[in-house]
Amino acid sequence: MAGAFTNTVFGFLRCYLFLAVAGGAIAGGYTPQQLASYVWAAQGLLAVVLLWSPPELADRIRTGEVVSDLLRPVDPVHSMLAADLGRAWHALLTRCFPPVLAGLLFFDLYIPVRWHTPPLFAISVVLAVVITFCCRFLVNSTAYWLLDVRGPVSLWALGSGVVAGLYFPLRFLPEPALVTLWLLTPLPSLFQAPLDVLVEVDSTPVQLGIVALQAVWAVIMLLLCHAVQRRAERRLVIQGG
Image (cartoon, rainbow, N blue to C red; front, side, top):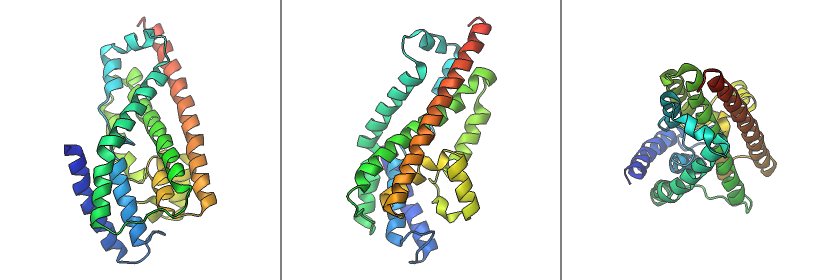
């Protein structure tokens, strides 16, 4: 309840700020209604597409408890991803709807009109959860080599919200920076992609392209997590862990 209330309060602050900046005109390609929907949907997804969480894996690596995870007959990446998908589903039921309902009550939100937008948005959110899990897994996995992960975790906490489209729509950035972020990093797939799909700021082919790009990044990031995990396990064996 406290988390949902906090997200709702910050939703009011962010929505009034963006609407004041837009001044009733189109800003970054968003109408005021689309901008309000972007903000309130982002507040609802904040606990679902979880950017920041306690470094549980890093702590298990530091204390050596990760060895018990490696002894289980399930790949650690798969087992942790399954647990994170369950967490995201619980957050969707308990943390997502209160901020969105507050936005519907107090603001003129944009409601999707294309029939395919809701299923595309659902797929986009699932892919965003998978990619975010991979990002957090890779940040925590630096503990295999560093033990103290406060540096990588702080860097991720400071930068992820900015370049993921959570704090503001990335379409506010200059086009070269926007294209670079979309093509070279998975970070716009975390918030910018599902929110752009929801508010229908692009045509239908572009919506499909955004979700396809998310799927490509999800596969790349999962393969990268498996590669890092295998490398880390060899390091543990060499050290006699």
